[in-house]
Length: 53
Image (tube, rainbow, N blue to C red; front, side, top):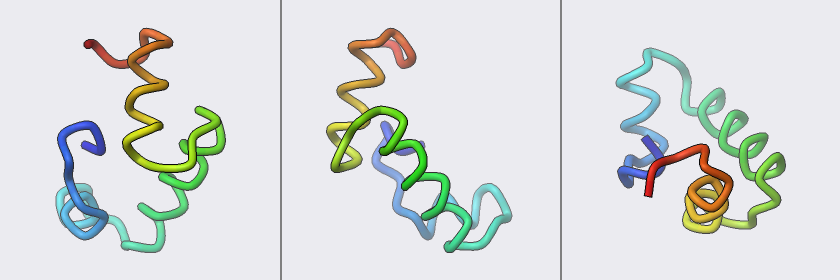
């Protein structure tokens, strides 16, 4: 969903979870991918083969 450009609020609504939970998951994902932004996380995930190019 991040790679598609969905906002935190949209992700929250689509997954029926709180905005706080989405932010926590995004923060953890950024840390695991050693990224400082959503764009950098998507790039790192594609480089690692986690997401298709």
